[in-house]
Amino acid sequence: MFSTISTAAICGMEAVMVHAEVDISQGLPSFQMVGYLGSEVKEAGERVRVALKNMGIAIPPMRITVNLSPADIRKSGTGYDLPVAVGILQALGHVEAWQTENVMFVGELSLDGEVNEVRGVLPMVRAARAEGMRRCIVPWENEKEGARIPDMEITGVSSLEEVAELLKGKSLEKKKADRWKSGKSGKRTEENGLSAAVRCDRSGREGQIPDFAEVSGQAGAKRAAEIAAAGFHNLLLLGPPGSGKTMIAKRIPGILPELTEEESLEVSSVYSISGLLSHKNPFISTRPFLSPHHTITAQALSGGGRHPKPGIISLAHKGVLFLDEMPEFGTKILDMLRQPLEEKKIQIARMGGSCEYPADFMLVGAMNPCPCGYYPDMGRCRCTQEAVRRYQEQLSGPILDRIDICAEVLPLSMEELASGSGQAESSAVIRARVLRARERQEKRGGRFNAALTPEEIGHFCKLDGEGKRMLEKAFGKMKLSARAYHRILRVARTIADLDGSEKIGKLHLAEAVSCRMAGSRYWNEPGMKR
View 1 (tube, rainbow, N blue to C red):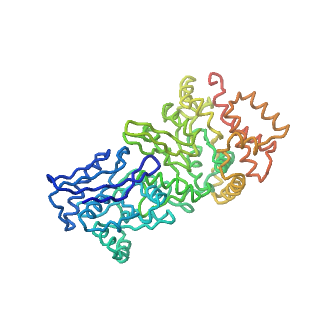
View 2 (tube, helix red, strand yellow):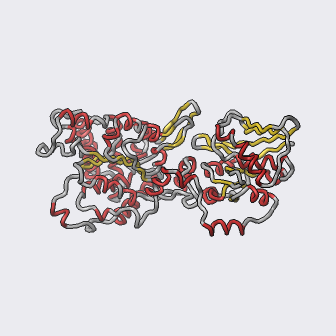
């Protein structure tokens, strides 16, 4: 008695179709699983055997062999329980082979036969559609997640018994209505502490994200945030403690454009693989905003582990990665961002496998100029020159070279504070300008200005004679690198877009250069030159 059931395995960001081959034959009673399996997959045999027993199906005392093919791909996770159980049902004659043809199964089984949610359903369904599958049977908590993929029939089930009924042609509509009415929630996602933090940061838009109207003064820093949001440029906010750096950074998500449908699928796939989607939040439609603590480990930031998984920088894909008190992260942690900031992806190689995750995020950093926070105000700064130098050197030259915009956030006067909040421009007004600039970028090719290639820079960022002379002078005075040269042109292009100009004018270029020079005085004091 032999059967084959289709399922899928996660390999990095992609899913690969897997076949659960079940053979039941005469011999000493045993239940053996093979096919390059992780420990949780090896345990599936016992879960399946007990679940079938509690469903009322007795497994005969025979030799059962399950092969998850292809055998050269490592299988991990608990989503293979359901396809193995269905394979046994088919091999025993409880299910006909035609009923499982072109159907993908995925789900974890409890000992009582309940089907629990699993991670990675979104890329699995995409892989099934690419393979010509017509239907996917998934845990009911993952049903909305899988339904985001068009041209695929998604059916959510809550128990192995429902699967058997479904394959026999019975309707589950009444049971589905009762489930949604009861408001039953998934277990794994709710228990994941990181999930709660991410949901908090991306939970909604208008009315939940703080408004720029609440920020008193700081016109220069808010202008820098607007330019950064319009072109998806990296931003560094620099100033003394209590001046409003964090306050401004946390309001940036409120002025960013919404994700496109393609971007939403890409971001949602990362969250699906990480197990951070649920039936309540089955899809990511707003740009993520993640703000890890400076005690974060290198593995948590970049991803990896014995069996690689996405890290914080991948969870911030197409969104904002905010590093508050940036020097406190340390040079080693910050330098890990160098490759992702340039290549917009991160490659993880471990003994358990090698994979590539997307990491196209907007870096927003906030820092004090010294340990006490008041340098170069020598009337208040208590730090020695050596202490200031060591503190600032936590940001290496290559990291600073990848920052497009540096903005000073200066202390507010009593008059500015007394005028009260709510008098400044709201996030809605700023976002309208950002969206208009984004529309111009879409007409040129769809990508943000921060992602323009050197060839596109030569085509879209042309300068007149006066502009070339200005940039040549700045290049020599600031001793810019080739990377910094291109980044200034990208920022100038964004400023021109905000101004509604097709050409980069003198004022646009001058503002872009000033965005690059804004923090230079902190590093150009005597003894502070880098």
